[in-house]
Image (cartoon, rainbow, N blue to C red; front, top):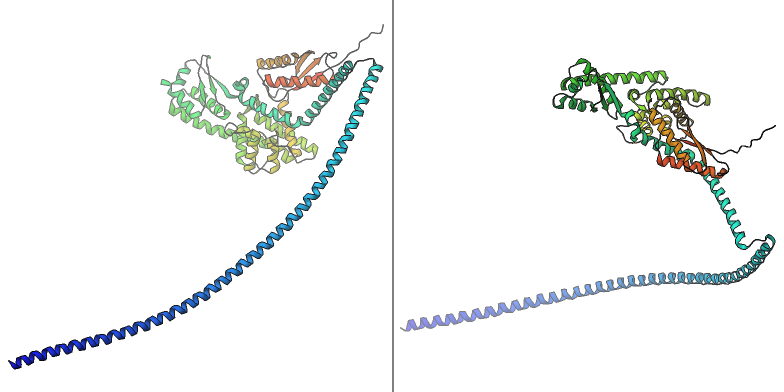
Length: 510
């Protein structure tokens, strides 16, 4: 019992001693941690102070830099303001000088105005005195004198206007008239209904009337196949033993004409046979065109032409212009150009080559839009002709301004060949109708006695009454007649208006 009690007491004492030692150790450990924390805090405070010093130094440096920049900007701004102030001062001085000059000018103008007013009053007084003196001397009132002066001024104005019109016409004749004739001639040739029948239609005679049915075929298959293959319209009407072929392309019309003639002779007319004959005919026509091109080039003595130019020349065999064969016209122009160039000592080769090719554009003018002169010039340029030849082709209808002697030669021979009597034909009815229309237009003006259309309608001679139309009025009449013809009639080329005024004095010796 006693031992147990001592054991318990010893255990309690041990526990108490352990608790005390643990508390003591904890206190020592906490104290050491507090000291460590204090040390860290002092180090952090010292580091913070050093950073503050560095930031303060950086802030001072930045403030110094900003101050320096601001001072520089202020200095620059002051210099700019000073320069601007100097410019304003100079402008103000200039403005003051200008104001002074304007004031002096105003004073001078005021003095001049007073002088002019004084002179005007003096002139009015002199005018009144002069009018009074003139009325006293001439025994005419002011109104009568005014009428006489106005009449004289009107006559002088009319004379001046007539002279001016004549000068303007002479100055613009080469350019304006030629250009107008070109445009009108091209439009008439392509569009005028009076010439459509001559340039777009070919008639094929039939051995018998019953062949029209065979050409048409069952349900129209033959005629449809023929039109589709050839590109030509076949017109079958009441005309006895005849069929009309219509197309703007003369080569297609010729192929269709030859093929249809062969089909009629053969008697076998069906779509496959039509295709065979047309294809064979096309090859033959192309061969004929090449041969014709070579023949014309040989006769014109123009060598070295491109094969495509030879072929296009051959196409002109089937092209007509107002009834004149274009291939024959080109050959004729080439021969004429060679002779003229030899007489003028100009380039014979350029002249005859350009004259031979000047209408080459008409071979494709149904396929290419534009004036045939420019089309031909472009073709010649692409196929290796020289710039001189290209220019002469382009300028023969003044689509380009002629710049060389050869270009003028081509213009001249084109007019000579086309204007030759008999070269270009018209139907008799159209010819007579055109002449009568020209004479009717000319005689519709007052003072005209008679009018005659001469030179196949290329000139109209107007006879006027000399007592009612003077020399200057005849100039106006010629212009008025020409303008009315342009507005009311359609015609190829140009028409010359000649007004004839003559006074005859007749007496007899007895």
